[in-house]
Length: 91
Image (cartoon, rainbow, N blue to C red; front, top):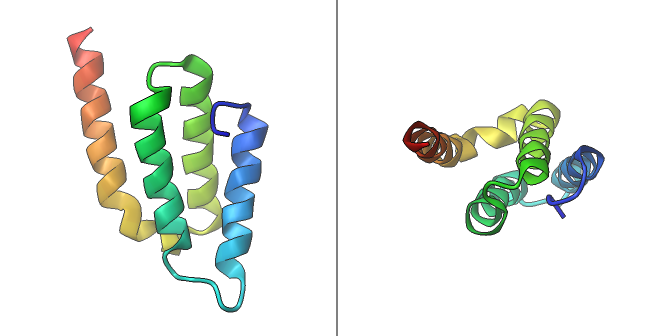
């Protein structure tokens, strides 16, 4: 789904936020969604311009909507960014 448009990425982020705000929701929903998005991007969507934009939109929106729940995912984001920087430096 993150291969779609920025609007799709925003909608997914809003859905994750909604699920996280439910009374009986697991505190790990946002963390798991971000971790899964990072894994999917790395393995399947890498270097597709629209996917890169949609992925960035998803991360931005989910961080804006529920920042406290995103904190546990920061190590995954940092690792992801370190790999991305290394790949861009090689080009």
